[in-house]
Image (cartoon, rainbow over all chains, first blue to last red; front, side, top):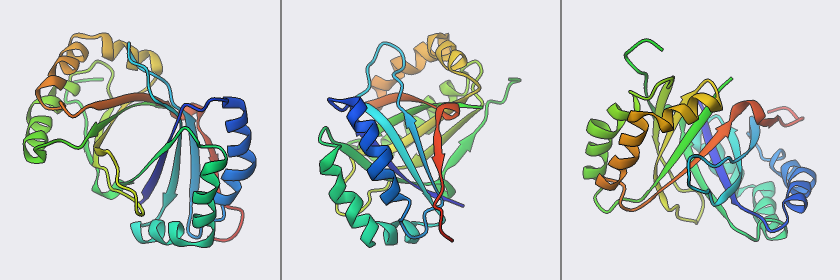
Length: 111
Length: 111
């Protein structure tokens, strides 16, 4: 059904500058990826007593792993990788999630 | 709509033992969380030339952030946190994603 390229950005020193660069420069490059279906961005929130090293999660949705790999190797893919040094100096973790290979379980009891 | 508790497990020393413990012990505890709607687990895949520190992504879906917090504070929540030492010695990163607070964008051109 879908493969998600997940980018987890670490806490930036200047969140306002990060947000502005992501919105005005980085997201428009990503939306030029061939085959991209959707770009979803969400602020990461901590849970329980732990802090989280991450600030923003970006999910880039493709139809297949082949489309994802082609997007990364494309001209906008290379441009977006190069752009990371302009705003993601704190670091970013990238990985892929294949929703077709996901195991889903639901609780057996009532809600 | 939904709030996801995301757990990213780092590469275990013994993946087969990790998988067996997660499936047979840890997942059944999680499915006893009050208010949990779904547990989705997916093997993390690397992209491009980078490796990923993560092995497994688990997404626990709730109706609201309040339900998520209540689940973590519940008896199964405490039990699952205690169980981490039995199989997740390599480490785990936890955070929450509020799908209602997600910004979505689609490419303007044709697919």
